[in-house]
Image 1 (cartoon, rainbow, N blue to C red):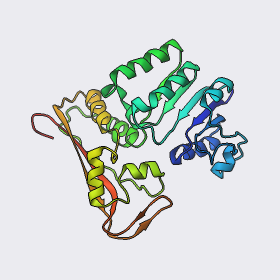
Image 2 (image 1 turned 45 degrees about the horizontal axis):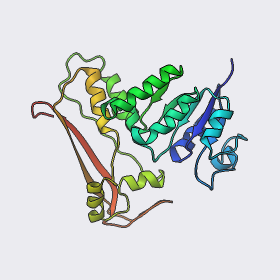
Image 3 (image 1 turned 60 degrees about the horizontal axis):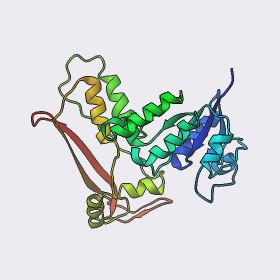
Image 4 (image 1 turned 180 degrees about the vertical axis):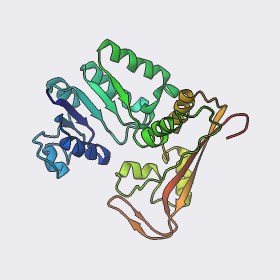
Length: 262
């Protein structure tokens, strides 16, 4: 049986870790690597990852790679493209080259809830080109979606669901760190949430409808809130420095209400 041939598009913190896992996975073969960062372009994949023995050279031209490299699937793992609207042109390009696609963007876990027209266009394009598109929704995709649905599958009556998680941001890239408001003052955090530059956990608008529709639970509205997590000690990573009194994270909460009850 031939190996499944994989192209990685996006080699940030998350994409790089997925690539390392793929290099170890029997039956998978990385045949292409795409990233726009100049410092990565031209390097051998294993040289950049400091892992494995892949001689694939990182390229910054997705059109060239998708047309010239024979692949079964593209792993689309661009940290900065969390939204359906922003990732759509890349998905379209992959589909038009008749390659299957897995996308980690948060909103792609359940895109119909927020971008119904684009979702239908993706679905139609995939059917025309006889390929599949899977949105896994990194972060929320398993812990706050799939796991909940699996654990509640055997229950007859569900009155309410509460799910929470704590994420260690220290090993993540600059884009994600910035979106959580890490390293800002309280005032900067508040301004960032108002302007939409501090996003917290993208994907709650997809998680709750997905769970509710799967389990047959109705709700009237979803209310979200973002509060700063204040550091009481000095913290430093490769991408940010946080002094005591500064913001070390975002406490993002989303609650669905039915008849004024959670």
